[in-house]
Amino acid sequence: MTPDPPTPGDDARPAGAGVVPGVFTELQARRLGPLRRFLVRHPRVMDAVVVVVFLVLALLSVLTTTGMVLDSGLLADDDRAVGLLLACGVGTSVLAAAALVWRRAAPVVVTAALAVLAVASLLVSGTLGALDLALACGLYAVAASRPPRTAWLTFGGTMLVVAGAGWVWERTDLTNPDITVISPEDPGGVTPVLSTTPWQSHVLSTTGLLVVLLIALSIGTSVRNRRLHVADLVERTNALARDRDQQARLARAAERTRIAREMHDVVAHSITVMVALSDGASAALTRSPDAARTALDELSSTGRGALADMRRVLGVLDGHDAPLEPQPGQDDLGGVVERFRAAGLPVHARGLGTPLPEETTFRLAVHRIVAEALTNALRHAPGTTRVLVDLRRTDRAVEVEVVDEGTSLPVADAGGAGRGLIGMRERAAVYGGTVDAGPTVRGGWRVHVTLPCDAPTHPDDRPTAGTDPGPAPDPEEIPA
Image (cartoon, rainbow, N blue to C red):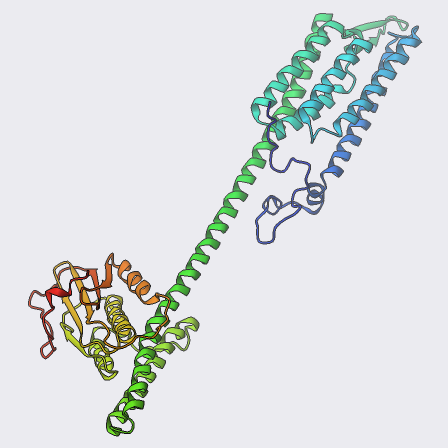
């Protein structure tokens, strides 16, 4: 039979022991005073107090009962019976006190042992002595630390055994003696004031035991329910704290990912352009100084722009010095294309003036996707003969397509960890979009991004006049 799990707060371990910093505990929830807090932290001290108090009350009860028996004259001529009554009362009290030491560790076993001790006391001396109080302490421990079913079964078994033994062996003349007074007419005689029959005495004893055990059971059940309620509140509070910490960790991770993506998008394409410009300026320095000067000017402009973007991204972290300039959007797409053209990439653009949704983050996503796709073309397809940028909008989505013809020069290892494609997919996923990237049949590379959006609010919206439509896409540019 599997033992019942102990109720929180009633095990042998001191409450509050081994408290983990930052975790809400039952001891904190109960708001106890200094004395009760000490007793809760040191349950063995409380057990010792209970045992000492019980032993003192039990011995007082035995001595009082023995004195009343002697005063009544019931055992006046039987010194052996008086000695047996006193010895049995003291002995059972000491044994019961010793059993109560283990009530916290094994309450059911202790209560059963006390019931056996009570039966033995009734059999030897005909009285319970103070064992009814010991049985109440044991049953309280059962009700406070075990489920109600176990507590009620223990109560029923104890009541049945002890009450049954009382009906068989209890001496009613010792437990419920007649109450008498001296008769005024006959100074040497006595007059009964309250006299009970043996049957009535048994009923009174059984009723008294029933009331005492029911009180102990109800108090123990109430204590257990309170402990379970407090433990549930503590668990809920700690669960909320764990959820809060988890949400904070997820938020920090998401913020780190966002900053890393922004830094990559800001820095990667700018540095790629700057490297291409510096290489071009170095190559044209002797044969075409003017072209080299133009490349250096563009290099300086690109570097300043990248620095401003980095300040804008990093400024968000402290919140005080974050620049208030608007984020790059659709209006900057022409500048992005021109920057890559200056770096030597033959970009043909079409539809850059296509009206996009007014949402700033949507326009920023389009800007970053175009810049990243051109960065990949500049890095991985040097000497390509053409790079097509096509921006178009349908009734349901905005589509961005960037296709290059492939490299015509030896390509060194450009490095990279694939963050560019990951960043494009993350930006597209925010709007439920998709990113298709792969080689074409001609050896080039094609990036096609679809960003779902609502239909244009103005049907007459058309691409901005003067935008270079570029050559129409070649049917053979379909990815392999």
